[in-house]
Image (cartoon, rainbow, N blue to C red):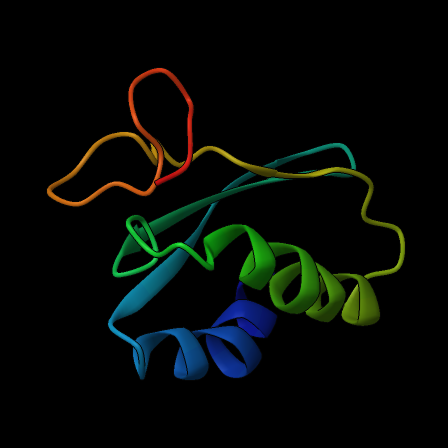
Length: 87
């Protein structure tokens, strides 16, 4: 899993100032964290659903849930407010 993230996902998100970390895998559930530019990016959920999840599932079809553990309301310029509303 980490190799797929390193090889196929990170080059793209790094080019936009972001990073995606594999935190853990429990059974077939994958826990990811988005950071740097991805944490405050308004496109983070789209990138996760249409890019990261698709790439992971293509390389590991047995994967179940892919969970974003990022605190998107934290940081200098979050795209979620504390109440959970998007900007």
